[in-house]
Length: 222
View 1 (spheres, one colour):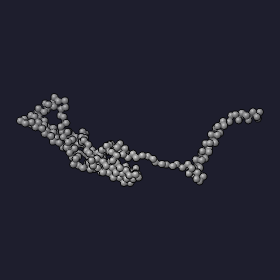
View 2 (cartoon, rainbow, N blue to C red):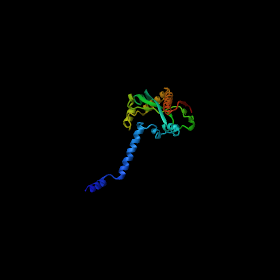
View 3 (cartoon, rainbow, N blue to C red):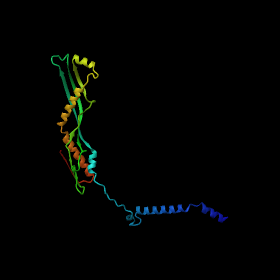
View 4 (tube, rainbow, N blue to C red):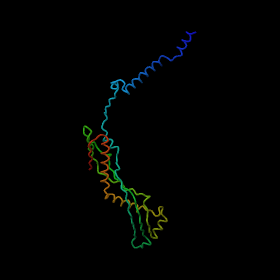
C-alpha cells in the first residue's frame, strides 16, 4: 500500500518541464535583482545599454512641412461712407448713401514651403544653422460679419423700388468690399510684416535651440 501511494503521488506531481521553467524564471529574477540593486559589483556593466544616435538631418524637411507660418495678425476697424449719385436726377429720386462700420483682421505669414537646400545651411557638428527665408507677406483681409454693421442707409425712390424687385434687397456687397480694401491698406502701413519676420525668427531660434543648435541665424530676402 505505501508503495502504491508513492507511485500515485509521483504521477500527480508537476511535469518535468514545469520544474525546469520555474528554475529558469527564478534565476532570471535573481539576476535582475542583482543588477537592479548592485548586489554583485560589475555585473551591471555586462548588460549596460550602449546608445548611438545615427539619425540623419531632417531640419530642411521639418521646416518645409510647416509650409506657411502664420506669424502675426492685426485687427482693424474702418468707417465706410459710400455715396452714389446720378447726374440730372435728385437724390430723393435716384441715389444712395450708406454709412458702414467694417471690422476685420489681416494675417501676416512667412512662406516656408519652397525652401531649397541652399536656403538652410548646417555645419558638420550640427551646432550652427543659417536659414534664408522670403520676406513676410500679408494675407487677404477677412471681414468679421459679427462686428460689421450698417449705421445708416439712405436710398432714393427708384433705388427702393429696385430693392423691392431684387433677390438681394439692401445688399451691402459694395461697402463690404470697400471696407476690406481699406483694411488691407491699413495693414500695409501697420508694420505687420516686420513683426511677422521677428516672430518667425524667434520661433525658429527656439525650435533649433531645442534640437541642440547653439547658433541660429535667420535672414530674409528674395
